Image (cartoon, rainbow, N blue to C red; front, side, top):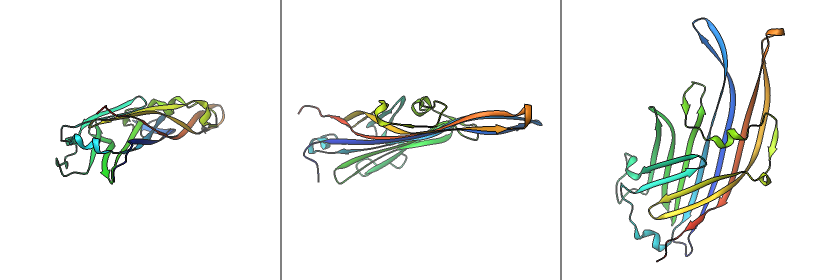
Length: 211
């Protein structure tokens, strides 16, 4: 069943943490703080009859923006995509041969669903992924609750097969700050480590072309 009035919603979640790792190389021991995490976006778009006037093909473009991160691709980026038959696609995000996320698109019962999952920063193996700067920018060096009323918003937008929607998602969350001490006496070293968790949801503004 198709909705009479097009609508769109989105939910966002991001985690960011700083971890202390020990590096042993050529008999030398050093320590480094690595920062990274992941973010996800899930958006649902209610479809109307007019949304089906454009039939997606393998060359149909997909553009999704979340904060400072943008994905652009086409449906045939999914090696299993079959024009006219596939009702869902999984578009892998690969950087330097390493899978760092996925964009999924599916349609069911008049609802188009977009799901995005992306790794950010540097993992414990030292592999650096494209950074989403939003959560990292909230690390203040103190434990606190990040209230919704603080005006923090993640801009996001979706463009696909003539469907366009956007919103600023207000987010809230927490920051946990701890100090890890390594060594003893005068040779002891202290490392401040932050962990930020954010989430939020919003109705997106749906731009519907005039008929």
